Image 1 (tube, helix red, strand yellow):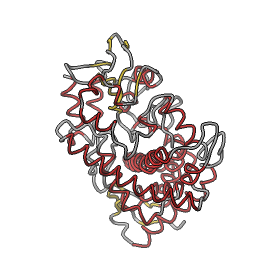
Image 2: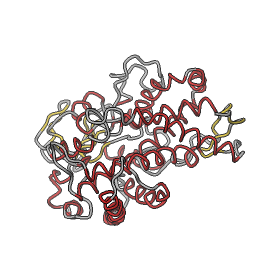
Image 3: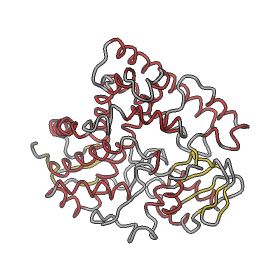
Length: 415
């Protein structure tokens, strides 16, 4: 039963609205069929497991890993070692601390806040470019805005030449697709594509790192390559894996957050009008969006380091665990009227950016980008409306969002 629901969730036909399937899953908070994964779909259980040190993010801890040639191949892959997202303490904690030194508190407390003006300029420029084309009768918001905005931001933050964006766009798509647990795909072929993408990305980043070591700047890539601290200096391989993670994760989820956000606002024109009149409403709107339409829907790559009991179900050591974040965010036992989009919620401790030690590293930046993007789109687009509903979605079930968002408007106000 559970595997049948999972297959339907992963099936592209369910991409536009997986929430009825999540509702069905929640009837059994922890479910398991034969040799399939243990699936956790309710808020309290997911939140607890995200903070449980007996849960591993390292695929090598799966009981099946010893007999899985694909996992062994990954373990032997020396092109790029696992990024800290796929590691457990203490390695995870050390690399995350080192990465955070040039990004946030306590060492760089104003990094994100000081980017507000620069981010606002990028947003205005992209909307101006749309206005200059005079094509307000059909705008693909993904191609014209939701994708280029976070890509430009992460390039500037890391110090990656923006003109190289078409190159890492292909690598990002391939690596993001490798996260998708498609039961009908050829795992060997997907693994080979991901390895090739990692190799090409690693070679590209290695060249940039060498340049930074010769002539460092104030970008994060320079700091990662050169800075030392209580944990020492990253090795070249650690810099490569960390920079690759930031480059790809730094825009993939934000693209979906902005696009899902604008789609939701266009479906709720009364909230869009409120945002137009009060840009400060963007803060609670983004938090509710992270609950209501999270850019990361599920975490399929977790395992147990010990036998653990969850909601009366005993999960053995080494078992595969799926945490359905988007289902937990719609759990009616945690949120009243959980299927309703309500930016006025008083209590909105969502799972949209994860929780625990693996909570989203770039959450402060993603929040700020989405707040600025949605408030400025609401202010400047006159009478915006959807041209396709539902729009065409990306194939990915993990990183869920529209591939295109065709909209029209009556005009674009001046900045």
